[in-house]
Length: 95
Image (cartoon, rainbow, N blue to C red; front, side):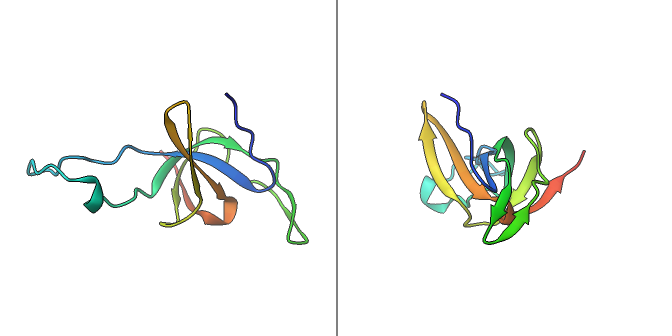
């Protein structure tokens, strides 16, 4: 299934959460922090949002840092994704 975001929305996939600390302690799901680094899977076309023209800065394949509580989580074919607005992207990670 292919998801195509609309407007200034972006489909992202967060990096896997660490389940074991460096010292070997296994973390239960209840204490894991939500990751903030994600890969951009698909990007909407931009357009007019709230009366202003929005040009998309991020592109498919970018690694980004996003706001901690941003977006709507969805599950497709057993994979977890999040749809966010471009405003929720704090930075693009460049190698």
